[in-house]
Length: 564
Image 1: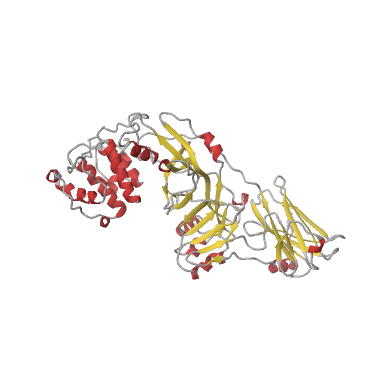
Image 2: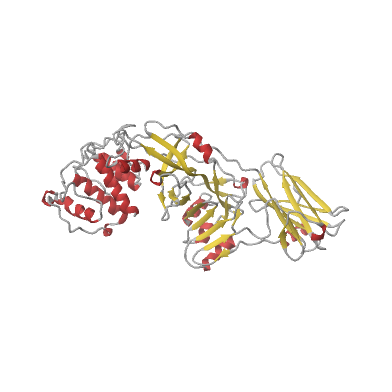
């Protein structure tokens, strides 16, 4: 049983030192490096003048007022054992205080050193004691004799991702993310950044706050009011080979989950655990119907949570502003076929989340709307009717890897078939990652809610990309003409970049007079932006049918312009 704190012990506790995290200057403020005077399951000594790490002490190392301390915990029984040496020998008073990961006091006791200057404390953690790194402070007979060390309660477990399947049906919709298994911040070593460190950035120059997590830690522990302390600055965390950028509003939203409750002793944890890629590879499905899926980079479990002093944790099911995560990948893989996927436990499948190469093409960047288990995967889809050498083969393969285009079956793409109005609307919605509000605002009677394209048509209509053939008819199965496709494509580009980003072209096609008046300006702007080309020579052929392969190429042109 933990002992009560006496007045003497309280005074000793107050005298024990706390070392703040240093911030780097410049355009961004960085909290980096481990706090001086602490080590994980290590040995510390205090000579009365300075603190230093040491693994083994010889008798000559100890100054007249020196203390040494070693803290260990048995994960199975929860037994904590704290031992050390007092240089003054027998009968010297020694006081110990153990601080929980949440910041509260877990144990306080006092003893006297034995005849050979040795001392020992032992106690058992309670069943509900939080997992994590406990700080141990040991004081002697003088205020200058202080030593700190720590121990970590519980070990890290790394789950293996389950088997994988990838839906191929057109119009497949992402489901709400299932809550990932809770990662207890106490079960992994975390780098602690205190409130004073974050507050200091208010006087620094503009730019994001950057935290570099020292090796040996798997995340960061932040004060619960980190969002408020950051102000308008984003928070960039570099942890091992992973980088994330979190907007302050997300951290503030996390705190709102406990609105009206006391947050004394609360903290926010961000944890990133890299899972075993080779094990994930074994769980991927075998190649079927021209589909091949392999791991191509990191497999990560990401967790962001608010922990109260009582040990409860809350998490956001979705972020009000996406969190940008940078993933590493194998340079020998095909970059154009890679993407970031998350494990959807409800569906039992990996679900595509997107991803784009950074400017150096050495990292894959994804903007994630929630946290879970994520992986960089390479997805190769081959269609029997789009062989190597087909003029659109590379485009179709690339867009299939981004889950923008789908086949008419598992093995066929039908590249020469006329693209329908519903199909092209769906292409644009997937390309721009548009979401529906969940409320149908159009009055098209030929777009039943049970159809595969219902949500895509609703999203395209809400975004202003499409209009009906009449107030009540969209004609989803009707074929698209080249001029209709051009208008929708330009609207999509302007939605993403803004209308001011486009200018009119001076190019006039030989069949310019055949272009409908409502399409003239759009085709002019699309040609100037490089989105559109003539169908043969200097003719546009506005009334000609647009094929599925041509639709794919048009979308690829827009992506190149948007991402270039």
